[in-house]
Structures are given as C-alpha cells and as structure tokens.
Length: 277
Image (tube, rainbow, N blue to C red; front, side):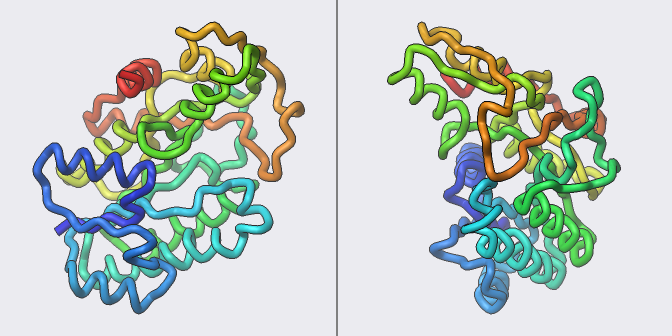
C-alpha cells in the first residue's frame, strides 16, 4: 500500500490525481488526519496502513516565516516530522520518497554552472537548514530512499508564482520582477511523475535533482506566464525586494543524473503551457 503525507498540498494533490488516473490505491493523509510531528500518531498510522511505499510530501515551506515567527513549526515539521516518518519507514521496510530543495545549497555558484547531487551543502536559511536535516534523517534511518531536490515549484493546486503573477496582472499595468536570480521552474506534474517513475522502475536509491529543463530568471518566467496579457514587466535586481530569507542567486540544479535514469524531462516552457491549458 502507498501512504502519502501532505496529501492536500500543492504536490500531494497533484500526486493523488496522477495515482487516481492510473487507478492505483493509496492512503492520503494531511495534517488534519496525521500530525507527523507526533511520533505516536505516526506509529499508529504506519501500523494501520503498513505501507510499502511512502511519498512524504508534507513540509513547512513558508521560507520567510521560518526565519522568525515560524521557526519552531518549521523545525517540528521538516525535521522532527521527517524523522518520525523515516523511523517508521525503516521499521516497515518501506521505500521512502522525500522532497527536498535547492535551498540546501548556498546559491553562490556563478550562473553558468550547475549544482550537482554530490556538491557540498551550505544552507543560508532556516528553511534550507531544516530540509537538509530532513535529508540527513532519511539517509540515516531508511536504506530504501529517494531524496528529490526541486526548485521554483508551480502547479494547478495551491499558491505559487504563476498564480501570483496572473493575479497581479488583473490589477496592475506594470509589474517589476527580479532578473538576477536564476533557476529551473518545476511543474508539480513532472515532479509527481518522476517520484513514481523512480519507485516503479526500481531505480538506484539515493539523491536526485528534478526540475523542468531549461534555465531562466524570475523575470523571464514572469514574461512567459503573462505573454498573452497587456501587462508590462520591468526587470529589477533583488536589492529592490528585501526579504527575510536570503534568496539564492543560482538555483540551477543539474538534471544529468535524472536524465540518465531514462526519465524524459519536459522544458519548463512546455510544462507551463501544458498546465495553463
């Protein structure tokens, strides 16, 4: 049986729809049904479901809040919660799929270079730090694991950059978007497909990077999102947008290892167009 945590989130919802399309049974839990920070609750859920596969989509992702008011919750969910899930996955010999982030790196590489799975980690934010500690818990407890680092996630379900831009375009003639942070956008559908691809094809356990193919900056991403609207978009550098959590200048993660598995990675433009349909 498959167990999904964070099943009502942006990725969890996408994954549920994908499994529904394939007529695959699963048990879906969200924070209201399963508090992953409660070890006893997690133990009980695993005893009931006895999962062979766990898709751990639950996470605290409020990057700026994690720096202060959300710091405690961020740690509880991303570290304690993941540790609880990892320990029970080990007990039931489940294959565990854990979603991580480009924020585990410091983001300081020149933008003509990519981040590789084996590069040194050096998180600059609380969110990045807790996601890395989550990775470490997964590696420590679960031999059968896939850690998938991703970036710039967008999709039909939940708040993300695509919907933010579309919303702003309804009330503004001009928008300013940063052009000095580079990365690869990731469609939740592509991510969900890769998660199941690794498991279904019994690919080698370990750490992978997954986003859609091609590189852009937030300004380029915004232009593509709003290409059919009359809004004018002005590029600015990130000093114009002061945020609590440091944003990486370079989030470009290498897709070479992922492509070597045989998984076909669509470009971010194709993924965006497909989602907008």
